[in-house]
Image 1 (cartoon, helix red, strand yellow):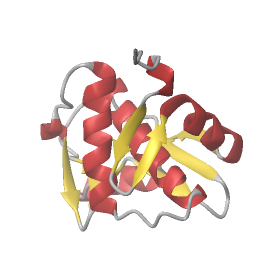
Image 2 (tube, one colour):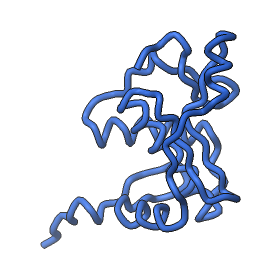
Image 3 (spheres, rainbow, N blue to C red):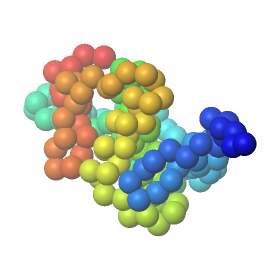
Image 4 (spheres, helix red, strand yellow):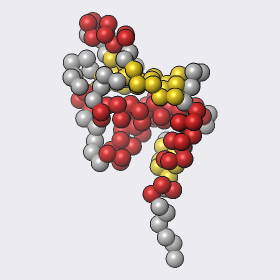
Length: 136
């Protein structure tokens, strides 16, 4: 008789990798600091009508920067996205931005039970950016 594995042991599909959610998240958290901050350049971009930066992973610094001037859902999506970058770096996977974007949306929906309202963001040159006319 085959029993279902507990939720924490189930594999989550990521293009090119398998992600065991709790273990891999702990590995990422032991390698990277997460910094919630204001991106000063976003203030300039707001004035010029450019798109805002949501997050950034600096592998050399072992830091994830998350823009704290966003809605909770957008912070969640961005954190998932940047976490996937870290997982790719730690495991030398070389995932493409498009693969990470697609998987971040899929994981967000799986974790939170609804699709992310993508009208607040757009993809520019492979980067997910917040539209500057969207309020928190």
